[in-house]
Length: 434
Ligand code: FAD
Image 1 (cartoon, rainbow, N blue to C red):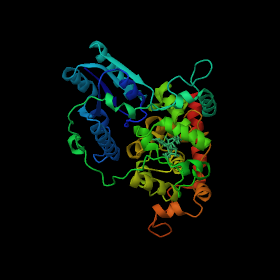
Image 2 (cartoon, rainbow, N blue to C red):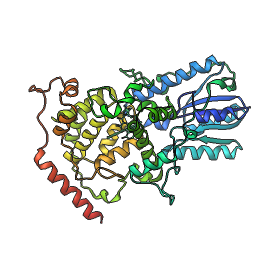
Image 3 (cartoon, protein in one colour):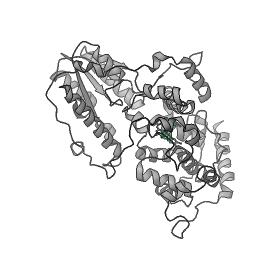
Image 4 (tube, protein in one colour):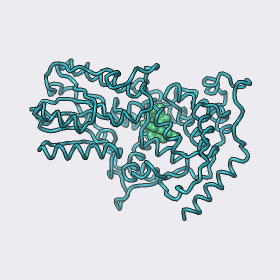
């Protein structure tokens, strides 16, 4: 008899809540990972770097498990079918995993739970990717917060050492099932190919960046943010460990981790945000949705240097600095009057740190349609933003070598009319929504 530990967004052995609990079952733990075909099918590129990142992460898990005389069983297909087959192949006493909060994952886990229940096998899942989940941080009347500041205060007031303690998994390697190594599928086995750029930011926490984060976080030319988004996305770093660092080193940076949990909470309680504005009255927005202008935004050829630099950084590296994400998003929505969902979808395909809740929450924040969002009448001026945050134009020059030459395109919209046009469109939408 064995218990399965199903890795999903928690691709690490150390300080892994669900894995720790699997160890306490008293049965040998067989670790599994499933490349979910439904998720892979949504990716537009067969050289998706996030798939390569997962592949690298599970290769590392496999190496670690082999040193314990165990092995990771990696499958490809439908989780429901694969788990059903594993119940035939092994005498499975229970399946352990960590919580996943996106609508797709919740539905998948419900199906898996029903299957396991029908077979008399337990399905035990745990909180791991956040400090607080679901309704752990809510208003006194039990309803979810809609304003970040109030949520953050309650989050901080609820926090204790208990929530930040780590799970000591490393000492428990003896609990893994001893078995001969399973072969690890390569990228080509799951229909993918190695991307041209296979380098990823390290998961090591750079304390110096966190310590000075409040001074450097808005300057895109500096390495002033941690680049841990990708690791938080796939759980190659423990959020408890990071929150401890935030607590001791920098409250502003800790606040970013709280923003992450705020948007996860919003998605959990208001799943309509996936398709629709958080504030439904904005559904009446009449977007212009000019495809040619959208294409210029995507390719970083709008003629607005800070927007173009950001989009080029994204296209080349899968990363874009947060300040520039805000400017580029605002530009698409407010300057071009293109539906924020177009931009959201483009980011979803390209960001290494793509996360449904953070991407959606931030896009809706920029569009003014979200909870506690920037008011719709705030229109970022790309030039003013550049003067403030990239005064020496280091970031611009890095990404736009042809800046200042005739090869660089002219601006594509008239700044003077933008404000009037966007205010009119939002006002009309709100009037219709009432
Ligand atoms: P740091 O600045 O070092 O912050 C540490 C961590 O805190 C981040 O890795 C992230 O997990 C979290 N965090 C920071 N800011 C935010 C925020 N505003 N909202 C939620 N979490 C935050 N972040 C994502 O993780 N995934 C996304 O898909 C995503 N899409 C975005 C889209 C737009 C339009 C905007 C404006 C922002 C988006 N963000 C997203 C938030 C933010 O830009 C990134 O988290 C940040 O730039 C990642 O850089 P970093 O890892 O160096 O983070």
